[in-house]
Image 1 (tube, rainbow, N blue to C red):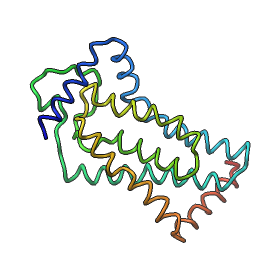
Image 2 (cartoon, rainbow, N blue to C red; image 1 turned 180 degrees about the horizontal axis):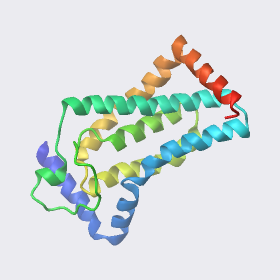
Image 3 (spheres, rainbow, N blue to C red; image 1 turned 180 degrees about the vertical axis):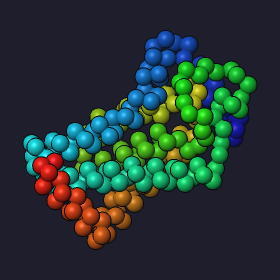
Image 4 (cartoon, rainbow, N blue to C red; image 1 turned 60 degrees about the horizontal axis):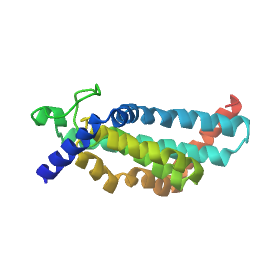
Length: 195
């Protein structure tokens, strides 16, 4: 299994020989994750000033909760499982072009949060926006392998379990009376301060 992981990593990293793929990988390896909070802020402002839609804002709160739950699950797993990043394990055959914090490779924070965000958008009926974020999220997760920051299986494994945080947020939290009361309180406060 590890041999497949290594061979796939080396093959994907070899794609960086093409300048175009190298530029795409460098652009997408980190940047798309920063569009998640930006989207949430812009959408919140849109539903505050243009449409004045509290139901849409509640959906945005659950999208936010999904990302937070994803981060908590990810940090919990990282506290028990520590897999080294490719550049620390393999004899140097790849091309590392992305500086990163020297932490664990598995599970991928970027992969987990981006896919929880995508699932939450889909469940919150933001389907047109979901399509807009789908390609950058996929490119980001593949680019993380291409630039030698993650193992391919780091990205594949999350694909099996990433929906959990979004489903927890939408299926369990949306039925919780306390969460709904908390959301209503947030909306009242934000409406009071005109946000």
